[in-house]
Image (tube, rainbow, N blue to C red; front, side, top):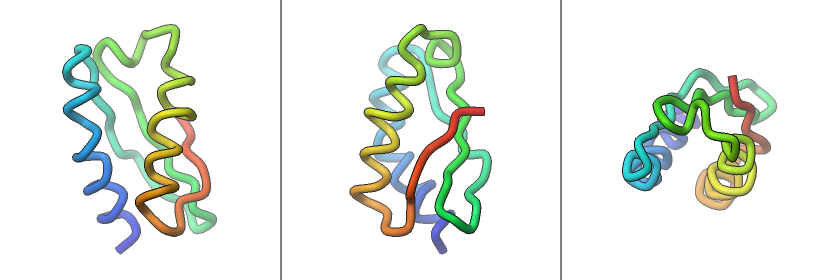
Length: 74
């Protein structure tokens, strides 16, 4: 259930990433609530990728999906 909630939340922010030529790919979620994601396209090689993951995606997921504790880029 948590995985589906994360994927749905990612669908809500995906258009913003795609507008900049990138995207986000769900990889996995651990039992402690750590979500592993892969930034692709322009976002994958952007010097601001870590900031996007932590300040953007992680904050959004923590606010919208109970049980998410952190986001890791893979």
